[in-house]
Image 1 (cartoon, one colour):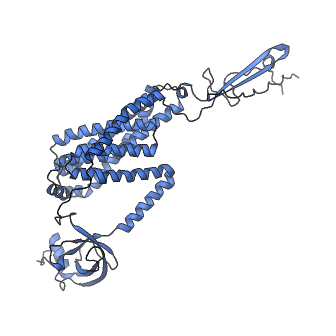
Image 2 (cartoon, helix red, strand yellow; image 1 turned 180 degrees about the vertical axis):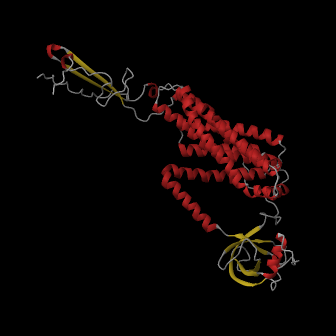
Length: 487
């Protein structure tokens, strides 16, 4: 029976070299006849080092710092200091609103309350005839409303609710009332809406809790960024437009400020975030150029409903088509952030998984991920706009209008242009951001990035846990090959 010589002991790891993140292990064993056998294993143990060298970070900073400085200067120059005052018209939203509460509701025949404004003519084949008939023969409600805010707190008035009214009041319900000081005393107050502050606040609390529980610190930072975004919108963008500043310039500066704050606050002041910022900025510029071209070419005025008409009536100096373009830019920003951050992170992770991959390989792999993102995001945008305009689309369907007629109307054409321009910007952001990220990562020449893959031997072979390159036989004592014991 043959036996093998005992295997050489595993090499003893030596101390890591100072000043480097590499641990080198050297094992020496002497065989019989003074035949030395050497086993060298090099195990590179790196921490999560920044994948971009100092030189590239300086290049990125040279682009973004002047841009951020220009945004700050723009904010300072165009800062409005508050919305301009105007005399209330009492039309639409331009009314004085107060809180109130329904204290009592009585059900009475409509004819006793003289609530039927249009006398029925017996023809119930039309919607007007059916409504007049129900008001004449139905049961109406007489609600007593008590004002709970403002200078007339405690004052009561009555509201008649028709049987076919979409909003039926009940005792104890919180409502919103409009005040018109020029009307007769008995008609100065009227119910305009239901007070939804409690359910809305509860829903917002549930949303914030879900974001923090799932996202933890990153989720908390996202909520802070969301609050700052609303502050920029409320205290800068809207008042500056009302002050007469160019809506496009205001939207670009405000959207840029929101982008810088939100991305760096949520994702950190890193080169990865800076690449996402550059991709978002390029896409926003493309959206702005396309919007200016096609909104002017299609002769879209931006004045298509009662609300925009009221704005134009109160502030004739506002460029309504520019306001439309500003809405396109701001509306596209949120989805752009999502796309650019995702693509940048994908390229970074691909580079960390295979540091030897060049920029072409990184771009091809990243763009394959981006194609799936494009399909889902474009579909999301189209469905979002279609859902918002669903009542309008129903009206066109009832009128049996052709698709061409519907699309040509300014009200629908605005949404189509808004959707298509935003979608083009989103589609373009994928290859732009992917190419930028691939170029930045592959052009890195920092020691951490050029030192090779973690866990690889000097010859390119992976290193095993014992410090030996896999695929390389470890010499036995005396340099001879061990013989296996026969069973």
